[in-house]
Length: 202
Image (cartoon, one colour):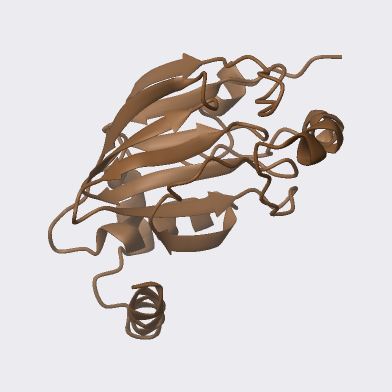
């Protein structure tokens, strides 16, 4: 699956087939319903000490003429988020201690638990976007057959993958606090809900 997606992604980039033109991006991003959620440190999954998870429902239009994954890739790239991948959300609990992450739901739907084993489960569907601050536990509990997500990261971070174990926990807590706030919102660029929800503290 991943190999086929990589081939498809490369072909789309080379040919431009089913990829949105730069001028289309403004009309593909729409005003979403925004919800934020904070999760406590549970002793194994730190979550973020200040910044909430952001869920933006029906944030992106996905016309049938375009590849929905390519739409999210183009939007994230335009706003400076990289390290882009296509695929599924892992079915085991993990978090990132060195970077924030954005997930764009390109196809299908999923039930995903955020915040660790004591967190909350949400259904996400095509067109939704989820922004996870560093440290946020996440795990797919179920995926529809057609499910596909697109993930990306701000340039100020470095990818890592932490398991909910004591050996990861202590070092991860300090690293999470030191991950800077992104300079751009993954959907809206210089302005957007990320800046309203993730306020800087002295």
